[in-house]
Length: 92
Image (cartoon, rainbow, N blue to C red; front, top):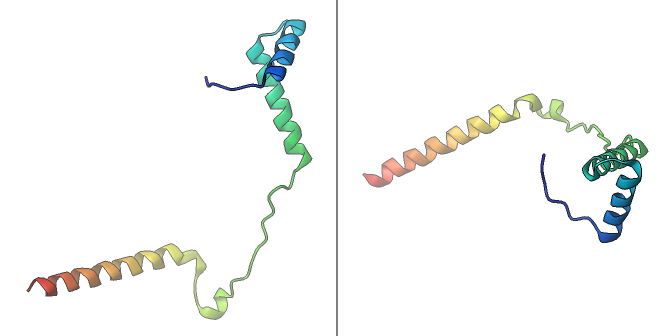
């Protein structure tokens, strides 16, 4: 992927010097540095996202949380039909 990236002057100088020393293209060195930096960052925080389950008490209310989308669809249909009925009676 080709993109425009703004690099601070001091960092660009370091990258260019390193690229010359290592006899590697500038973009290859930038990609390698980004990969290493991201990999290091990911290993420092292996559990950055913590998911904690919560009991919503659905069994007590009789709601099936797996069917919430279906319930929303049914409510939308009811609302649409109600509005359509009101529009028809207003036109008469």
